[in-house]
Amino acid sequence: MKGMKLLGPFNQVMTMRGLPLKGALKDKNCEVIPDAGILVEKGRVVQTASFKALRQYYKEDIEIIPLPKDLVALPGFTDSHTHIAFGGSRAADYSKRLSGISYLEIARQGGGIWHTVQETRNMSTHQIVEKIVTRATRSIASGITTMEVKSGYGLELETEIRILKAIALANKRIPSDLVATCLAAHTKPPDFAGNKKTYLDWIIQELAPIIKDENLAGRMDIFVEEEAFSVDEAAPFLRAAKTMGFDLTVHGDQFTTGGSALAVSMGAVSVDHLEVSGDAEIEMLSASGTVATVLPGASLGLGMPFAPARKLLDKGAIVAFGSDWNPGSAPMGDLLTEVSLLAAYERLTMTEIFAGITFRAAHSLRVLDRGRLIPGHTADIAAFPCQDYREILYHQGTVRPTHVWKKGLKVL
Ligand code: NIG
Ligand code: FE
Image 1 (cartoon, rainbow, N blue to C red):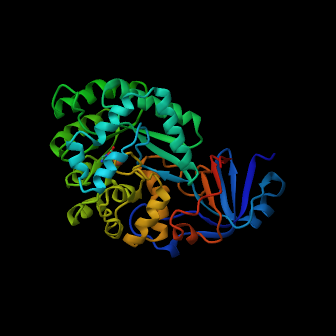
Image 2: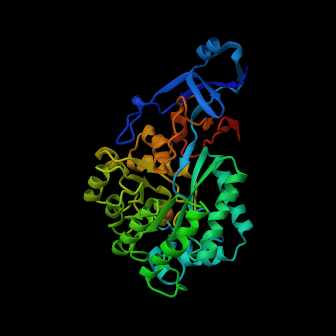
């Protein structure tokens, strides 16, 4: 029986085996197997080891999948924070920012998130599905095989539900896995008849039960910020969402602090952004099990300093990286380029970067069966055309995978 496939030989396979969830990582501690093969069965990794040894041991029980020379394989990447379910463009906002008007000021003038909400509300569900499919397909070409996608550009019942349904429909159309998050608490839309508290109550009382009943998202997010929701407004909202069984995640410490402390106190799975986190926040995050998700694309999009990723790792936090792909603050949507630049500025090791877009990012989404090329993990694999894994980040996003497998099936 030839149920098993042997992929290889790869010049190198970076397995991520045995690396801890928390803290700084040295490249010398990362397992890099030379002349390696990956044995796959029913979409899962059976073993990653020397290609020759695997071939000799399994002999005729395996089908060998021949590959070109000089490939380096890694676990398929996870982008744990995106807003790719949006319509329109915010190029006009971007040009305003380049002329000196701030992101928060543009939001106060009625641009920003509200602009994208209006464009997204005007789209059919089918059009939203197409946007998600196009963007997630582009991400597969950079090795991303698992992607979180938030709602948050509907901000009323019908469109929030349509966006979450569009994510589910897109998920069926593409090989990568999409993990949906409800971000109805992105900002209170100006057309909601009530204050911020009653808007958050509405999410919990009206929207969240439908999401639960129809199983449209298992995660609840909120933007804790001056122009969005305060810590005091967000706390009861998060408590209620947790009671309903949602995993919590928070947009925190992007322009002002407060969000990260709240996220940790609520046992959130992650708090994302952290551009303005200081020593107190870093200490607290490092002592917690909440993943600190750094979003370099938002710093690049807004021209703001990067989050203190180096300090977070040194203090022992679980650090993941996401693209934050959205039309306002992070239009690039290119995780590989973004983390390459972050690494250069923050002095992050290559192992820290790859850990942050593989098993550490997967941990923040609670998809625990991926992110390492070890027995039992999903056979999600990205293979780059080079001899040495260090070529990948060195080329700062310009070397792309030539082969991607999802659950053992070749998708690129
Ligand atoms: O993660 N910070 C809040 N939300 C998004 C931006 C959304 C937008 O500007 O459309 C972010 O940066
Ligand atoms: Fe975001």
